[in-house]
Length: 444
Image (cartoon, rainbow, N blue to C red; front, side, top):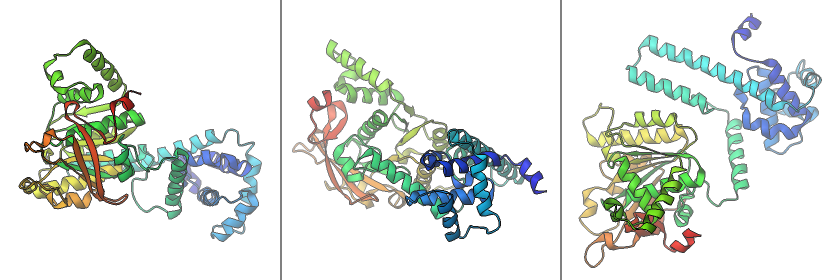
């Protein structure tokens, strides 16, 4: 009966045994296998137990051979007196060499993927049959399950701490190889990177300011810097400005051409050449813009799931977003939106930057904004991992737009201390940079 059941489930015991045998024959192949296989990719329990023990030993830099593995299995309580020793020695006999270990691992991963698809298809079928929720809700839940499989992550549930630590260990090794002093993606602005430790995956980052201070410009600067610096895709959802307006701002920032000249088209030959070079540079990036009005978080999430190699999501701005229609209270709607965006950041495993307006109280006096000034909802502060405010002091003629220095106030920071970073603002180019930055450095 057990044999009949195993035939109906996608699995390959031969490939699983070949992977384990290769790891015992040549432990040098273990890092490559670890990059491709998780414990739950193994279908057969003895293989799963053996793989988990070897992963644990590798993480602690222990010598791996049949005898040390057997001893470790005894210590971890997964050694079976009648079968384990004979099974491990048998793996050495049936594995010719470790040369094809990656091929064996691919078979194991493929079978695990088919099993996950089968389980998910059954769950989706159950949801449809029971009609629990609307069609949109079932579709959203189905997309999440499929995306989780495509991303190589568990759809949900409990996960062994050993597997979690394995992921942490791998991340530490990756950071050590990079030799970077930040844990996340660089913003392209050194002083901001130092304060935030970069833009970290699964973080919800709120960027708030009064109108006209430059929050959209900074968001576009970060979008371009991340796209150019990582080569990954960046999704920019603009609920206020059109795609053409955003494109104009990106060109002005990249080409160092006065944005007012771009609006009129009155450009000299050098400026035209700069625009052409900037357009070529921007076109090489994978920045995607969506200016659909009233887009919901669920729609954003669904569109982002289809983007390959996604590195960042930017939303401009939360007060223009639509809720699910269940609440008439705008405060409640914004609360639901902020919570949904945090969930989206975790699911997509990328940073999500969302722009926000400040309440009118912050405009009554020329003072620096604080967390209580976030408009319409205190839950934004709770859900966000990072909250940043842009603040520009008014000059003598009471025109804040004339000042070329802007304070980026990091009011909440889960990756370090709050604090203030002073940025250089170039309004004619709609661009931000480090205060000590100069154009000659950029041209080099």
